[in-house]
Length: 239
Length: 200
Image (cartoon, one colour):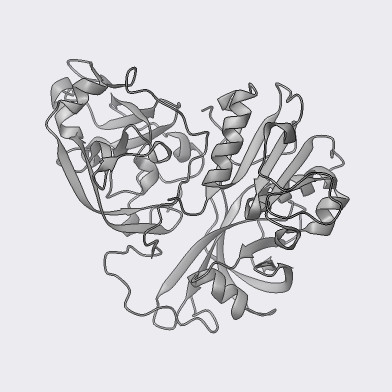
């Protein structure tokens, strides 16, 4: 593992106002937050969101930023509603535009892409979120040639950012069910889905469940990509 | 902070949970920043070096032959999950340090992994029964994705300090930030003080 360039420490807790809520899928929503104290984030970084009950009890979770750094005072967090998820179900079921939420960030100095070198982005399910920030950054800065995104998702109904992914040229593979007439049959990521050659300058960002991350990194390693060029972010339960 | 509109929280919070943490239940999330390595116990080693009288290196079988020791309690990840009532078996870091005999100037260690991962700890956080090199979780061999064949276990600090795939300890007379510590995380990481990030 090589050392990343150090990121500045995250700011203090601050208040953020929900200014927009968009539905991505039946179980995912994107919350656009306006920050009281805006901070430039790097594509791939996350924020911690904290809920406080009247008795002082708090619950916190980390959410990746989906929006590219764009100099605005807003960030977008895409949140998957987990069954029995204390924070995610509150965000989905209770939060409306105009609400104030407490956040802290941006956080993370490893799983970040600064838009200055070629990047291969492999996302499984909701793991596409931090990679979306990277893809959006590449397009916003006119360097769409630098970033290539491959997304694995169960079915068309589970795909986040569907229209935008198509517009930005992301490759989509479906593991359980494809749209009608889709050229690739449903199935998990295989070597054939990876680019035929991955340049020595390319950094590969893998984000998804532990199973997806292990499968993808095993393929990358057997394709000859060095450990030091692979950055992984995992989430979700195992076994 | 004023309460979040509409949020009531859940009653009966477990007193074993540090502030800002939640009980993850039976799950054990994997949060590794790199590919999971496949390490053979035939070539695996664990070393103690740096400011010691006697640099030491153990093979897998040699380390397993040291007196074993168990931890039963809780673990806390900085990403806000905690896992309550777990057990690990391994060897106390006191045992391996005693063999290497740290010099009087020793005050910190840098834990290293076979992957190149590093994390820094004050010496007093890995001595006096507070840290282990473990190879068993709940009576089973430690899974590869959780750091197997063996990882460091420092359960009173956030879990990134418990280096997976641990390869050794460098004993030092100064603090030197490790991987996450260079990436904005706290140098010590006490979950009860919420020492999550640099500056906390």
